[in-house]
Amino acid sequence: MPPSPDQILSSVFGYDSFRGHQEAIIQHLLNGGDALVLMPTGGGKSLCYQIPALIRPGVAVVVSPLIALMRDQVEALRQLGVRAAYLNSTLEWEAARRIENQLLREELDLIYVAPERLLTEGFLSLLARTRLALFAIDEAHCVSQWGHDFRPEYRQLTVLHERFPEVPRCALTATADEPTRREIVERLGLEQAKAFTSSFDRPNIRYQVVPKQNGRRQLLGFLKREHPTDAGIVYCLSRKRVEEIARFLSEQGFTALPYHAGLPADRRQEHQARFLQEDGVIMVATVAFGMGIDKPDVRFVAHLELPKSLEGYYQETGRAGRDGLPADAWMTYGLADVITLRQLLAASQAEERHRHVERIKLEAMLGYCESTSCRRQVLLGYFGERLPQPCGNCDVCLEPMPTWDGTEAARKALSCVYRTGQRFGVQHLTDVLLGRMTDRIQSFGHHKLSTFGIGTELDEGQWRSAFRQLVAAGLLTVDLERRGGLRLTSECRPLLRGETTIHFRRDSAPKKTRAQPSSLPSGFEDPDTQTLWESLRAQRLKLAREQGVPPYVIFHDATLRELVVNRPRSLAELGCLPGIGERKLEAYGRIFLEVLRAHKERWGRSS
Image (cartoon, rainbow, N blue to C red; front, side, top):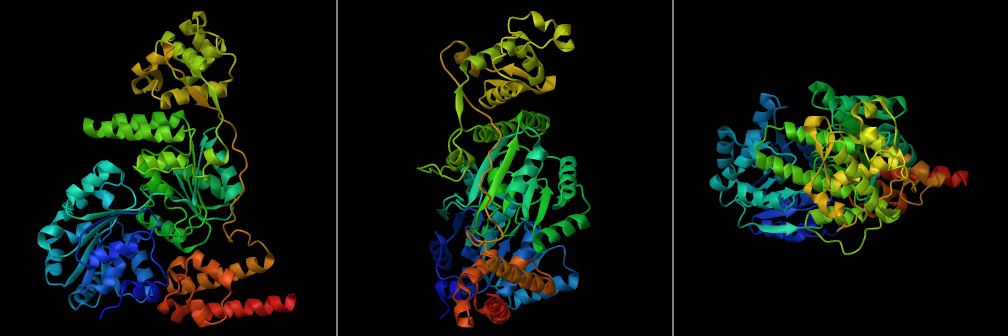
């Protein structure tokens, strides 16, 4: 009799219970059914196909879009004693041939492969001679042309069902709005698949959005205040900005590395390896970095420019706190970000239907940024999920957003836009409203307008905020042909006619929030636990370097925290902790028990 899912969960992966829909998905695949799995990052998607792969006869084929992701997942499985391998372009011919022979001899439980290789006739023929347990299509949102990570090869994966109709398929993603879900089903031929949708909520992530003043200084303040020694990711829109911010943070004493498509491949690989294998490294990157990064102890994700969509934002922020411990999603944005993204959209060669969808996505992103209600409710609502109560773990909930009646100010701003000819940017419009006699205002004769000097009740920062929020609300639009000049939209008419009102959020300097201790569990700040924690991490790092793997492949931070809390004294006690299966207990149990013993002896004498 094959082992049960519960037995494998305990003996191989070291956990005593399933989460959410995991058990139901596993049983469905064991019964030969197809599945569409929508589960947040860190929710345990991999177990949903890895456990059936260890029970069903044959090998499970996992379609994965990134080489780095394959390598990390295979190494983690090997640490657990699972027979896993990958086939990709990094392998020499002899190594690839050896793995193909293992596949034919049924010496593997899982094989990871990129869609490009899977779709070759040679590999499909190889699969035809292999007993197959299941197909797992990871990052399935890549099939959607409306998605943020579109991969054309994913469109051709229907060949799996056509050639191997009896083999169950499981498509998995952490990011998919309703149109993307429909396209996954249609493009992959999953009309008969059972859908398992978990909550997209990541309650351990604290969301914060601040109006941009000096982006890099604001970022520096956030890092010094909240994450002075933590690993994290900083996203920027351009390669030039990536280089600038990485250099700035390095000058400020952080270990910060750049990552973008313009860097040589070997340098990108070096930086990614350091990020994965060292503690406290900050990766400053474009969105070219991140998909499939399995590092569980990323304590923050920061955005210095506005993402293009809420799907992209959710996917990127989801790389923080995969271990379930507290993490931050921090973003600063301003009107200039909106203008930049709209310029990129206008310059796109995509068909009009695609650009229309992208405009809608951008508007949803703006709505999230300017929201005066719980950010998590707005974010989850975009994915069709209702959160009944405010989350209590975003900036709006922790520091309720003050608002003010901006109706009169909005009418003045809109009138100023109209009377100056609907072709000037925020700085000029603000100068007119404040009555500043600049050379530009005199040359255009705008000091003679009725709107000149009518806005002195607000300062320059408040007017900039008002214009930004009017753009976000759709009452003004950016004229890209006039270098960011503002124009009225038809949506502003009810406000100008006095039929509606508008409230603005009152921008203020971010208050200091309680830093989340990231190197230790909450409340573990005494010298004893600090020393033990550092000793355990040092031992983990030593083992990882000896094997050439990331430290989290040995043990996650969450498992080390369990060692600090429970301080087991025997292999039996150690084996009861989450994340320690039989193979890891055998390989590392005595080593870490010795660290605990030495610490107790040392601190026992000192006390």
